[in-house]
Image (tube, rainbow, N blue to C red):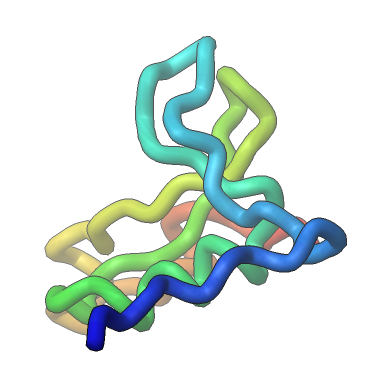
Length: 82
């Protein structure tokens, strides 16, 4: 018996934008969706960030200075918008 993939509910929000037009990266509508996507990625040294170019959210690597503990992400990137 073949298993069928469950269909997405019509009223369920779509969280991923295939690629944003301005920068061509995988984009998410909000920070919460980008954080959910982080849980599916094998690398945990990444963070969601708001893109100034397209206004959507992306997931990117933390800098070496943050990973070493020299600075916090907030010191390097500034405050994170909600």
